[in-house]
Image (tube, rainbow, N blue to C red):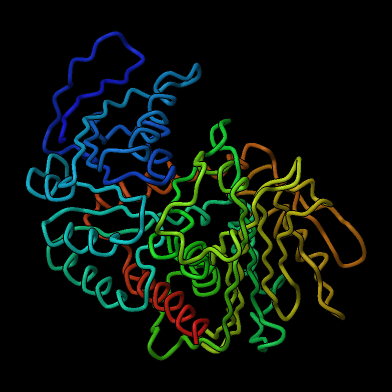
Length: 450
């Protein structure tokens, strides 16, 4: 049965709705099945109405989303004051399109129809901020390209949530790669030894905002979530483009070539599955992926490709649960003619992302590295410093104030998107490079399936 409820979740006592103006950004959250949808609302924004319309099918996904928002509203430090206006029903998407109580659609959930939702939203004159991935199958890549064309035609902005651009070690890796006296020139690399490697290790069981994360069962279904090779890999491909060719337009038809790709499964028994989902049985739609009573989720993928002749490798691994005291990890290397810029997050780094400058054999960059970190970059990132580790290797010491955490990056992405909305346009390179990025991930999946 369809039902309409207005849920006022405020730290203040009143539930009276505030009036909004046409100039304000009014968010509509569509089927928020992923916790990333809530993280966009972990903070308030001056130009955004506190009234957020939620359109979703009835079920646990929307209930968990509202619980997360309530947690932000009732926390002791800097509570938010969001007011969620909720519609649940099987026609939730049609209802949103018909009524359009907002002007920005936030999409972060089940990916099976995401590309279709994106296209229909921009066709109806709505701006879209979408969590990655925007597309999970090669067959729907053309639909995404059409969505970008229609968005431009209708004067609305379609943008995806690339949080990793705001991680401090990645920012500094990019900055240092632009200093020839330190980095030299970006190597071309080879298939066996790429110039850029980015590896990401994630875990199904994890904590978010201090609470165990309950994932929906569909998260394990590649037809609804997408394989790892088209999901988290989106971030890694984005960083390759953003770091190596900043603000340059990538022509994917002529400048990107997938060389090799593979995919493999993470295996779950029922007990492991239950600990992540809270369910005591595998849903029927996962039967196709069950072998000998265990679920095989194809959440892992790796591929090597060239972009403008530069060899890059990305790899995404999903384990069940991180060892005690650890968490998701990231490894990245950019190989230059004078130095390699390496981000490690292992036991030696206490599982904290750490950036190293490692001189290549015969390169004397000590003075240049010291000047770059202790003087040039100080203007933008005050407090960073260079710490010798061994001969030709230095660690970039980063003050804790820059390590704000993954969850806070969603607010930073949203702030950037709001700036673009105010300007009425995205940077010229963003749309073609989003298209290039999703071509790369979907083409890699095609290669892996062959």
